[in-house]
Length: 273
Image (cartoon, rainbow, N blue to C red):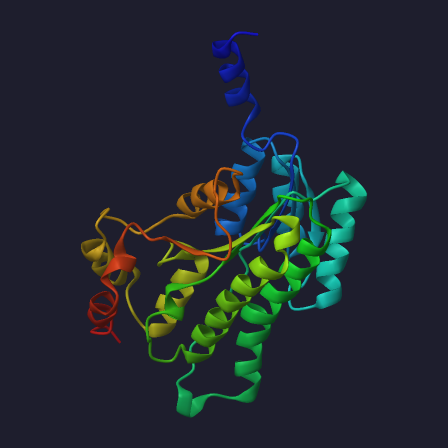
């Protein structure tokens, strides 16, 4: 086979042909998890989608010719069950992505133990249990990407519980990268800025803001001129999963450049409610 023919075959096959991937947090239509699952399938991977919501998971799995397994990321055992389900059906796990996130507002003076625990269980404990369950059985040289947030870096009123949980999850990613080094796993996190998802729209609505007005401020402050989409995140995740991405324990921005602006970006949005 000449080089041209080989290159054409590789393009047709996709970068993850023969690989098995788990995408946690894929049950929300139009979300980052669903976009990542579709992109991984287009790149040739066999995909297991998971999260909460049996029906949307089944519909997505059917669409991409994959499998669905409903699991609560906050449960250590549920993550183990998800891993075992994947191994039973495909025999290996090469790639894993966690897009689960929950962000609800609560000023410090109004914080409750229940809300603080919820933010921690979903955003930190969930990351911990998912990564551990996958890494324990993952093929040597495999890759894991989990989802962080710019809120872990920017002080935002009412978001302290969420921010602290995401910051803790980032530290865990660094620790896991070191502790699983004998398997040469690449364990990293992606940091989206605001991304046009149902969670973003709900959060803006809870603030009492107009979506277009709020997003318009970000567009003006973003060097690439728009906010990111779930498909942008999926594309970056695939780059981070690729074996040529020679990093581990890192946190990679995908913001169109508005992450560079730090507090000025935040202060402009604080002019809204």
